[in-house]
Amino acid sequence: MSEIVLITGGSRSGKSDFAQQYAEQRSGEKIYLATCPPAADDELAERISRHREQRQGKNWQTIEEQTELSTALAQASSSAVMLIDCLTLWVSNLLLAGGDGWAMITEDRIAELSSRMLAVCRRRSAQTIMVSGEVGCGVVPENDLARRYRDLVGRCNQIVAAEADEVYLVSCGIPFRIKG
Image 1 (spheres, helix red, strand yellow):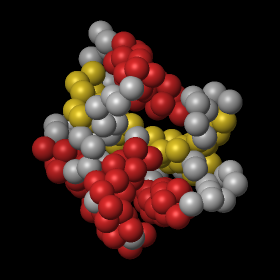
Image 2: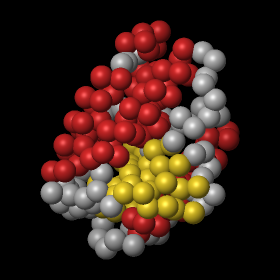
Image 3: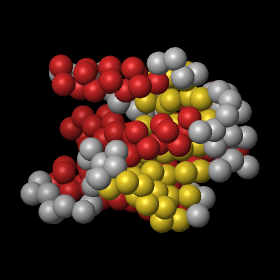
């Protein structure tokens, strides 16, 4: 049974950098499972490029999968340390995949998909590290889509944190171990 680590924090808190450093301290093969969709603008393209450069020459294999995390995890090497960056984008991708039917993605559905993903992680022999944004610390969003997104990410984070062996909260680039 594999160890699961959740690393969360606000936007630009340093959670992805910490997650990569944490993973790189483990020996063996490493897989970066990127959930970001193809870059829609120059700024996002630059972010993706920076993330790739940070892993270059450090024994990382990259898998890109926006919605089917359980499938990607099941097909990847079970003995490689897995870094999923990030659950926040995964939830966004699932929410927006329905187009105008986005209201069909419920907290129960996110709970089901999160639990399925965690079950696959537990069958792996190596550690799985997940990054997710903490989106519920701000003001209540003014529109239904943004509130639904916040609630779905919050539900996903709760389920993953409950199952995780370790949970870190990163603030101002400083990781705080809050579980494990």
